Length: 72
Image (tube, rainbow, N blue to C red; front, side, top):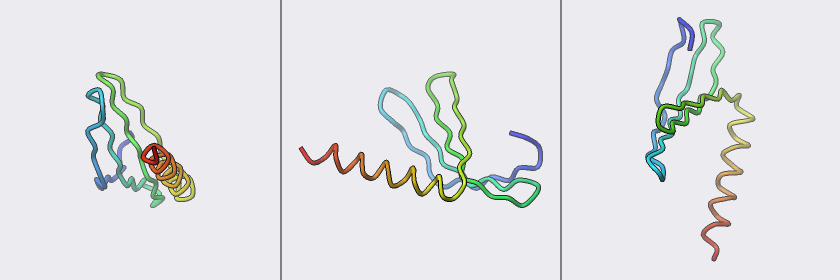
């Protein structure tokens, strides 16, 4: 994270095995906005910035995977 980034919390999730996920909107000093996915596993933190298309594609894939896992 760099100075000047502005965050808006969108969602936070407690996941299995004491993992956590957060979704934020990040506005950079240039005015560009991205969706930030933050995954926490103990002390390990993975942060991924997604543009609008990538965020929609990831959301669609997660919905598909959730639908498949509940079919049986």
